[in-house]
Image 1: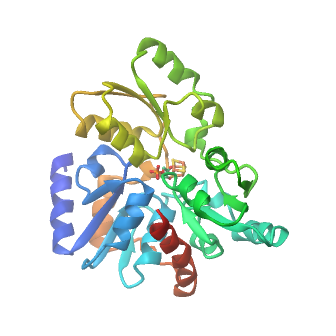
Image 2: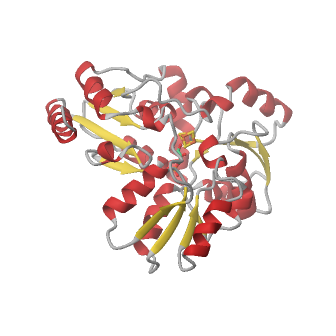
Length: 307
Ligand code: 13P
Ligand code: SF4
């Protein structure tokens, strides 16, 4: 079956089953094209919360995102097209490590990046995404905050909130895709070639790269900046899926990846083929047990209210 035929069949089946196809910015273009909604982690959490009258949510993203949809929609069936779409960063914060940190810092508040598993979220005061981390940290009364698992996002939020003491849990959690940009030397070569370009960098990147950026933004923030800015050329320090989306949806501007082919292999586990199969079989199902979901819903809802 060719691509457009498969896309047509997925859309048909989705309508027949009253399903919602939620898609992260890092998905392959063929999936993005047929999504009911494409966005960053915060936008997808909000969309999942407002899922409304659908029978099925197909989550084209990674495991912790589908878990968040399950936490917010316990009465709905959530499926992820590939059980192999697992974010390695989320696995860097086992709940035992978080509990030990809480015992060592009993007065600290706990902020967790949404890139964590439900069990860990159930132990948090509030969650955050890359687009609202600094804002949420700033709004908390506590001076000392346990925050994880991404060390670079902790650094970013700390720069924006100099009055707070942020403790990274674990000490060195990271995203291998964003770490791969290093200090951004390749992006600076592009900047030499295109001096008029705006350099947009994700806060999961190393501090040295963030410091070179014109703006540090979530993928949703980058999308908005590319729409609204007068600049005509942009260098993007994030996963290339976003560059595909920008090229498709914002004509007349030039979008350059800070590194060619810097892909998240977890995100790229999802294909048109397994999306079609998952819709047909209605599996693999992602279902967070109700006892954990009840506790994990509190910090997620708090995030949605605070930002
Ligand atoms: P955002 O899309 O929220 O910026 O997050 C990027 C990411 O790495 C998700 O895993
Ligand atoms: Fe996880 Fe990084 Fe992939 Fe995002 S880009 S899903 S943080 S590995």
